[in-house]
Each structure stands twice: as C-alpha cells, then as structure tokens.
Amino acid sequence: MFAVLLAALLEEIDQQLAEARDKRRYQLKDMRVRKRLRYPFLKMVY
Image (cartoon, rainbow, N blue to C red; front, side, top):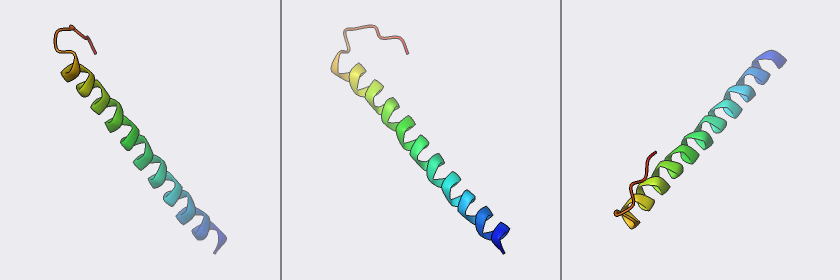
C-alpha cells in the first residue's frame, strides 16, 4: 500500500517538475526571439 502511494506521489512530482522545466525553456526561447526582433540590426548568435 505504501509503495503504491509513494510511486504515485513521485510520478506527480516528476510531472510537475517536467512542466515547470518546459515552461522555463519556452520563456527563454521567447526572450531570445523578442530580443532579436527588438534589435534586428544587431547580429546576435544563439
């Protein structure tokens, strides 16, 4: 019983961490695009 509950809890935590990581990754990509659009005359290398 305890093992099943612990496994479910760990899966939920893993899912939340993955979602938070994906959101941060998207925000970083979005910041890069906005920076490039704001300063198109700069040659930024990413």
